[in-house]
Image (cartoon, rainbow over all chains, first blue to last red; front, side):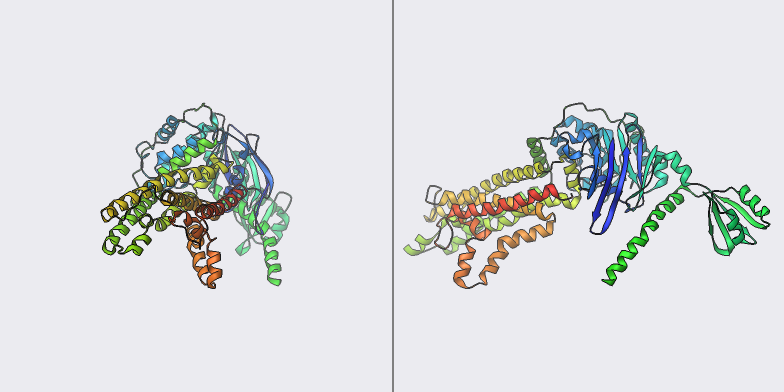
Length: 312
Length: 279
């Protein structure tokens, strides 16, 4: 269980994380989504006590992570694909981490075998491919048999086989009752891996919901219509839960109505419809649009701050 | 270098349970830091380089001396065979100091520090563990190399009746003290590395403190310069390696004690910041 309450991180005059509140529950894979620079890594570092929040707090399994005397039992983390010193062998890397908590050497061999690195364990981590580096990092995260797993972009740099492997690993970790919190900047990737998603943009919470619900909400289809009098049609169609945005050539893009509803409304208003189609946005597009909105929402504030700065 | 071929993965990953007791303790973190130190080729090479500089420096100085042996009572009386054997110690300060810096700055450069602090969230044991690892390894290596340098040099000088023994006044202190100085410089390097967290910045600062200050002090008027120089880290620290202390320096143990105080202050500041800064 990870609980984040009003978590905020300010760097100078930039808010990297802005009042985040959410709970990550055990037993399911929770995806942590947002474009690059949204504040995902900063949030994870604060959860693990590496960065101090400007305000707010985060707990892992009920307590601030820095208070634990058996930290590797409470949380296993992958924060960077290449966190091992390139000059050190995979075995000695894992051994040095295990020794801090008194974890037996046999456990080091166990996790090396589990991620399929037995043959490479004595070679320097600097010579590993990105995929092998990710697996070493995953082995490191699992050393202490942690109750909570926090992985920052664990699918980066993996080939298809590697991605499948990590996905099934994450599901089995969650099935064992662990809390599994996994970040990604790719929506499609997470839609098949995570059951629950927490979406942030510009450090702010956008969504905290089941993946199925998020997909239904995000990929709401739109209707594109071309008509003889687009202005009049737009006025007729507008209403609660309906957005109408005019495009080039008098085209209208409508969300919240079906093609049937648009066609019927046009006939009732005496407007001739020239073209009427449904457009299904891809999940990735919808996600991009949603997080971009978050960016635009914050843009005016940033601009006025910049202007003030210039005036001074 | 080309990356290795990917070992294949089993379709269904299985991570066995691990139910044994886990607890972070200072001795365990010390063991971990010892594992880190001995498993990195770069740190091992710096230890080897320290041996080569101290032992090789003494050997070379003794061989060169053979072509210019002191003649006459005054010259022989002024000849310092123990000091000659420790010629390489000054150079070895560079490798010992760099070793201390790298032990901590290397973790920041590679990002491993985040993992280290995830495993040891209280952080301070990491600094103490590194300090113990560096003190033990550099002390062992420095003692072995200063003693080797001393005995080899005296063996070369013995046929010319110019050698000395560890029993002569000041000799044992100079030989063992030089090893202590190298250990202290390595610890100062570690402290500066932990403070600045960048390899280049920490190495420049370390050598600036050790040698740069002495050079700057040289620009001052003679008597002021001499008075200030006594208290500078390198000058104070190396007093312990002098067989015959002179009036212009602090006494050997006072000088080395002052060097230790400087090191303790930097290490204390590094420890204070370590707990407060973002990793």
